[in-house]
Image (cartoon, rainbow, N blue to C red; front, side, top):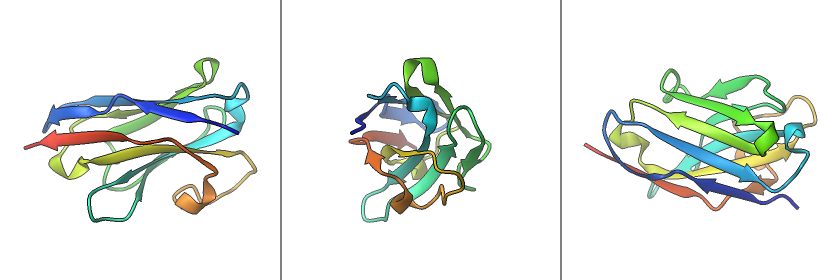
Length: 126
């Protein structure tokens, strides 16, 4: 069983930055791909970004491309989501999720992920 704990959410003005962290309770973290999702009130959970296995490829939703960056530090069993140039429409609960690497998978599909964090609120004021 893998536990994921997110942190770093908060209230920020439009144009500001936040960095979310996702700490995993597993020593083989480098074998897990990590996805970031968000859910705004009244909306479905949507894909934000993914980083594949050990420092592998990264993927982003069009809405955050060029503003958000996901990285990982396998020595610390932690993934990060750096969010810059935040907009009010980025307001949501942000979740990290993990799946044991098994080759190609649909990184934007939340059903592909086995483990989920509890979520952290990000609020961007205009």
